[in-house]
Length: 188
Image (tube, rainbow, N blue to C red; front, side, top):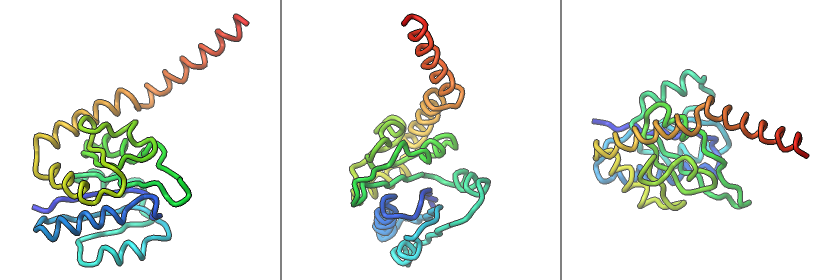
């Protein structure tokens, strides 16, 4: 049965899609049946398409929010392979990993920027060093082949994302900060 891997992000070097493509190539060469879907737009589209030649890979640009949500629903696994770029820019929080968790899709990511605030290795997903193609291929294979691990990570990630990043939780935290500031001003 074919496994569907999804990645969502701008098509720029910092998003690291090239490393994901190389990891999938390695797995396909080992006999795994994988469809890779990359959703995003940007100047790297042609380069990524060329790198993905020979793979069952679809690079989708200019699609609606509903179509993106449909891609999450069809995905067996989500990968966020962001890296530090030449200018030292890193990933922020990696909101797309939260979107994947909300859709109950297991997540693998490179440890870059704020991603580790969302993807906690072995708890809410698998976190790997940047540019680790071998590790990424091994993690993909592990999640695809280990149903128990996949279900555990998915459940824990969904619960964590809802307890930590749900809108009502964030609004309550922000309100508490404002109330504390107002109390401090009143005392001063």
